[in-house]
Length: 423
Image (cartoon, rainbow, N blue to C red; front, side, top):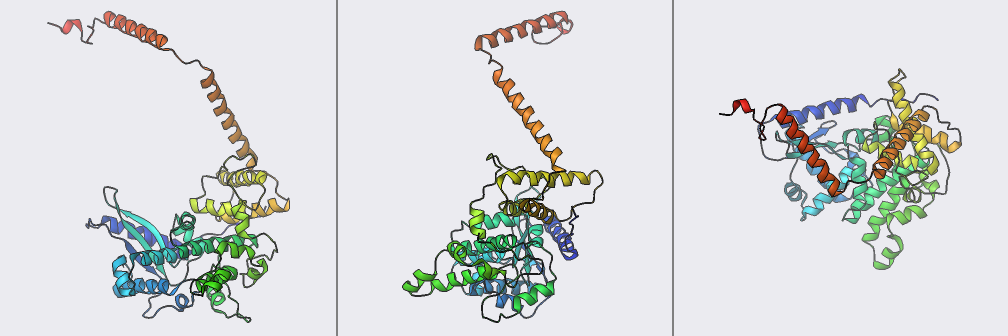
């Protein structure tokens, strides 16, 4: 099959180097008190970027919290201590610490704010977090590279105590599922200008357009959920159903508009929500899937969303083929730079019936041989009769007798000392 490769953007590689340098510098500093650290990514602004004002997902308090954090960055030149929740609450004029925490969770979910690393003291104790603030939502590929727990954070946020955080986290995941469902690569590399134009261009019919990674359908449902909370009870009951239910009932064709050029228009009647909710990370026998070790936690979460569209019998075979391709690199094959895109291609072949295992055959055979060896070892251990207490005492007495004979031959006393050394 054709080689699919795409490296991380140079800007992201440079950012990663800056993050590692910042962590090393902060950890080497003499201060001992725990404190979060932050760097600002993007152009320096005396005013705020229009994208944060236009964002159709963020609520006013979320935008205000972003601006307060941004002010702290602007006044100190870029690298500064992350403001405390109390300081943010005072400047944003909000009365609750939980409101600030909720806004920061939403900013992280929507990728306006990235948790890039955790700082440790010399003794290993937690010292603080390193955040990165952006002047527009970060692409998913860059986010999962910088935030190692981003997908796990989204999954946890689906059960967050605040309804708005739950809704936004679901919206992010639904947008990823929707892109996958329609043949779009959620980790595709887009030109920054194209992303900005797409998010700013007005629609002719007044319906919402795609805003960076959020699909139009998800934006519309999140807006309905927000509006429903402030409407009279009768109207609220009609339009403020849970986001997941409304996404399921929406027309899939609505989300096909305004997608990037990397998407394939594939009509289907199964929504991402329904599809993923039925998916269990297991093969046709119900056993957990075995993933290539090379995949990060974020990549495994995204891989699950691709595998959910395959029959259970094909899932492990696709993962084995991917692992086989990785192992082939050690034998001289060209490296796979974009693991998720390569997996997406394998899944596409499996859905079309064109997938034929090749490099994954040896991976599967090696795993089965290892499983068989483990089963035999377990059977042997189970078939070996357990030693009774009497047999154990007899064995210990025999060992003590032999030890005494050896000491006698060596001229040693029972305490282990040589007789020649005794006065």
